[in-house]
Image (cartoon, rainbow, N blue to C red; front, side, top):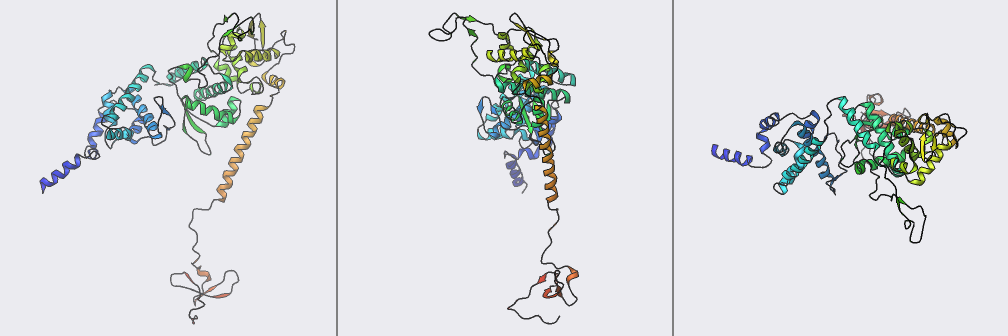
Length: 475
């Protein structure tokens, strides 16, 4: 009998899913012998993504993957990055992830290993190698001061990224608004709604929604949850980038506009067939602080100076005294847009031209212009500039509309809560209240007060008379 029992026990131990049942204490000891992970990553390794912080709408290594594989890849990279920071070796990480029945984060790798031997181990090795490279090139944030240093580094990347076109300028304002929120909260994770972003950015709610979608696709932000009826969605800014021009600005096109022109004008054979003059290319460079402070002003609304005007003012605030050709590069705008915006700013008294260079006036960033050759009546503040541009009051109208929408939402929620049925069981229509039952067992009609022919059974339920059955006798 004992021999047969030992054989059965050995057979159970040989099953792939049964090893984790006997060696629970050894698994805990295995992790205890390694350098400790952070509490959040420790919970992610053991319990999996229970909070849904790693959504699966992503691509893996350049190719489209299924939701399950993408979700598992994000979880694995998060655990691998923290393990690399803690000082784990590659074999220790792989063994911890492949531990059967213990760590939910390794379920996908174990399924891969079950389908094809060593495939899951190779997959984990690639994840750990990439995470180790990321940790080696990045800086660990241990204190609030380290966070502000990393935030300043990200703001610097945003300043030198080419945000081209109307969509690019909207994405720039989106990133600047989120940087301001993160700086105030002291964390990459931040909670903000579309309406709040629209008011900070000075644009419509639909423009914010499209910008969020572009930034998510570019891997610059990650949505952690969708919020609720009281709080906005929770987001996270992503710091590490490999190539600034492609990773920070999602609207950069692969083909650059030509930087050549001809002083002879269009000749036979095309516009570029004359004597070619090559203009020096200027890298993008704006003052993010100035752009963050001015982007919610009515003067920079869509029908006013717009995002391109904001980029011109921010570029001149960073380096005053630039030509139109230089502003094409530093503000990431086209030549016609540069001349059009410079003309608008000059008519407001905010920009003055000296030879071929354009300068911001002394208090231009505060909206106060000065008398120049192009402007005899300069504006005194940004509100007056918005009145001249025809966009005054657009921000207040947007805020009023958002307040009405919020009040309507809250009123609707209160009305629905009042109409909601109480969480009590519905009364049984067959049960008769005792006050309607006479001593002889007959029932009183609650509406007319008359005595009916109905009877009450011993369990309290109503008995209706049967017209084809026997007649009721005296009780």
